[in-house]
Image (tube, one colour):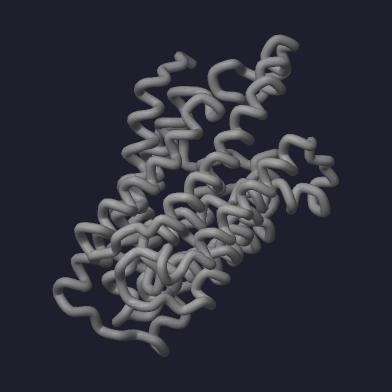
Length: 307
């Protein structure tokens, strides 16, 4: 597979734009519609895009680990609920910054779940990242940007979402040992749609025309983002284009500023730089190990996976 850095970077940056846009739409609808209703339509209308990705290599639903898919979907659903809750109450840029704590939690969770021993460099990166979280969460008043008051508990939910997102990533890694990525994505979309459909009769709130259009767009944007991200990581090494995933902060800040009047504060900028810096550091720290694996013939140079 050809390593096309420009194509991969452009596709990944585009994927982050659509993710920021769908979060903005979830923010618009989250104040009037139940979170589960929004997530139902997100998964329902993203399903055609998941099928499009799967069709390229063949749609395979057969699995010997159905329970693993169910557990992964439940955890993923909890993560999505947390996102809707936090984007509704936090400025978009702050929610985006706090979502970048996922790599930090991956390091912490790898100790009890994967029995890994993180290097000193990883511990330093984690410390820097969480110091950024503290700056973002506590930087109110003089350091906080213009806008309405933000409940303190929303920061804890956003931070917890980073941990739940990390757990979801670990579950995907475990399933990937025996399951194709398209099979995992298909079962996720199907199961999450069914899980959120069950409570709909009890929580249903009829959306207006504008809200209905937003719900369709949320699902479409989620599907487009997934297609673009898939193409991005198929175009270039993860370690090379990974930092471009942080362009989502720029999109979130711009949409929040012009769409909701959320002017980023000094604390958000400083904390964001610390969190993003720690994530980029870990991505760069992974590169030498991957290059060594490629040299030894145990990893494919283009995809970063076993040959």
